[in-house]
Image (cartoon, rainbow, N blue to C red; front, side, top):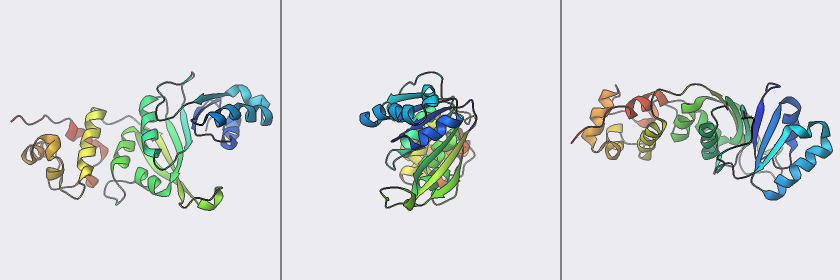
Length: 237
């Protein structure tokens, strides 16, 4: 964390992490969905660290539905995300905010494994590929359940993402291929992409045009492979 960073914190809760972030960052924009917590957070900061209160902006909103944020634009994302929204929130914010050049999020251990999985790994799937569109993703640590109160029934993991330029190609088109490839991940890509391409034969033509074995499966392809496949010309009937 650099002293000129503008941190976007999602789900600040009671503000324990917010106070730490305010000490090391230029500004913190905290997005909180709970109206009561959103109202209390500025009070907490004013009481515990009044000299830092002017660095904080609180936005009462659902992070999954945010469409714009106050200036200055955030450069880093810090979040503790629930299992059911972790991946959608992360992908939404990375697409919405190109100024985010890195992220550190706390998620359920299983989600952390999926986000950071490499091609060929058992956990590799849609979250892995889509997160890799935006940057390099890695596991940054494991968090046991006993550090939380109340204690959850699952372990957690830290995931770090460093932004890099996306592959050449169209994001929406690439993500559509990814969704199709993993909808029936046990099938070969020739079969899994039949509906996307128009038929198994058309899928094979496009796979071969992209230099991909039609008998391979989605978990063997990198995000660059998917982008190259999405850019191939549709087969005319």
